[in-house]
Length: 254
Image (cartoon, rainbow, N blue to C red; front, side, top):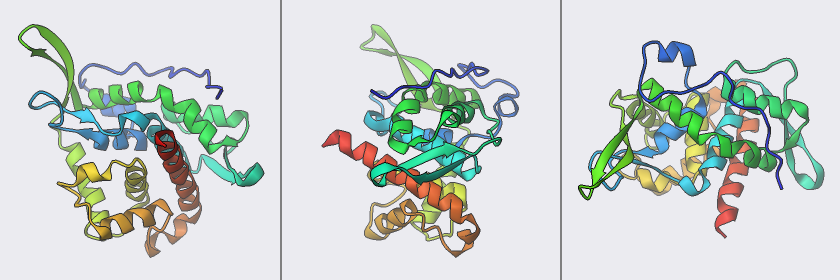
């Protein structure tokens, strides 16, 4: 059994609606927030105007991978080889992240280096709720109640209408469809989206074609383009994490 870290998400309460100063209080969105926002599929719910989150069955692996990738992008973690060819990830000493959710994972890794699969299973199950709360507080997604069958009120998710999801999706589309050279964060986001196995569900905005599939696989492997040469360590860490996400999301379905 994987031992889960005991650290709670102290300092974060979330909220039911966007409040003044939410962006300042929460800071910049984490990579996991951006990924969850992209995975939210507007107009995919049973009622008009409501949405669902793609890839729910393996979502906690994907979100945990995004947290680790974010730590890698910030230079807060490093990877090394463990026993029997496994990969371990550990915290970079004296370089903790300021974000409370990222710090939750960093604190767990600061105890000792751990296998990537172990970390995904340990931190993943606690992420969906707090990350969704953040998206609601930022105004990216709305929680609402809808009456069904004229009798029951059900909780639903709606697009927040602020355009942030559309902008994120446009950035990813430019990389996958138009061949634009990505910024490291967008490259990691596109790679994680591909690793989640949900890219075919984006076919209206991102056509599911052979060139797109090829480009997505390149990003998964850390091939981000010549302009990312200075990000070699980050690319290596992120590619390792992304491929661990692929293993974690595929194996449970076999």
